[in-house]
Length: 435
Image 1 (tube, helix red, strand yellow):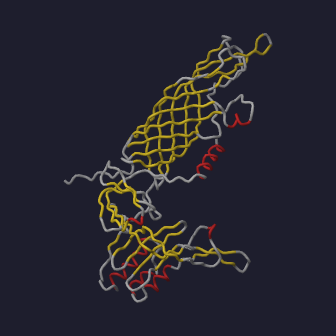
Image 2 (tube, helix red, strand yellow; image 1 turned 180 degrees about the vertical axis):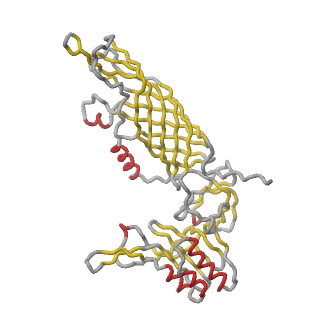
Image 3 (cartoon, helix red, strand yellow; image 1 turned 90 degrees about the horizontal axis):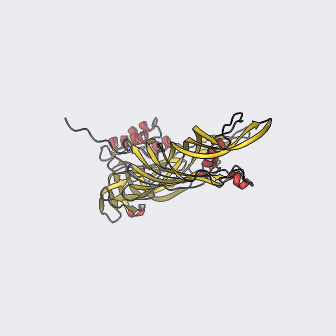
């Protein structure tokens, strides 16, 4: 089971999906021509700058896609604010060990992007997150933009090895940038490299030394780039079609398929959404019935004999995997899943052509072993309901080649419907009525 789970995550890791769950919140867009659009914006809880914005005028209406260059600003009423800016970004700044270089290189290039606004006014503070480094950028009147970024670098030590050093001298940068303001330089001495820490230094300058002597409008408290993981769960039910070949090579009078008819199944499911809602860990536990055949060996007059045993049993199935979501209009989604399953048979009812099996040896009332390939599924979700179709291959136990042992010709196909129980984990809680 462990090797199959590792195989699943290697397959998933080799595929890059651009997918996400849909959570719309009230907000407004300012287009590049100055027009303001008010409605709902799909909140992807961005960490890196948004590469597109999905907007709709009202709940239930068709959504429209905007590229960053089509916009001046994006504002969510929950408190996040992005502006389309041309900012000098040091692309050499990184904390990723595989990309570290000797000494402390720089590679400053001007990027046009939707940068997150933390402070707004005569002095601006933005946050831009790149892979491996968070940047805070400050602009005050009469000065160029200051870029402060997380960075590490390597340096050879006297022993011939290489030491890992922190190259983020943001306190010194702030001290020089606001060197004419004692309040700001004092605040910079102990400021942490966080949104709140850098913002406190900038606010000190704005209130003590700027011409306006007034605090800047702050978006720091609401600018949380990530949300926690969220859980959804509910019930699932449908029909399961098991196709297992009868492979007894003439020993059975009923060649063909051992269980080729639809059988109902029911169970529980859960989705553990990752913070970005780009994917979810998926688990399911379900019950159904099935039938199959096997050999039972027993002793007759000091000789070994066999009989084809037919049995019916309950099947307990557990699945674990990943789901990816693709948005559709009107808060609907396509979803694609890949998972592995474990099966256990319960309460078998056994019959045999030989009648009583007194003296019979042991046999396994098994259902089938899943192949190396994962279970694959396709679904369509609208609000609480999810319609799904999935399939699983099983190893051919009596296959004559290695391919049939790995892949198999036996399979099961399921079609079902799932219903979410409980509230949407990302839905805004209703406000209490005034007393």
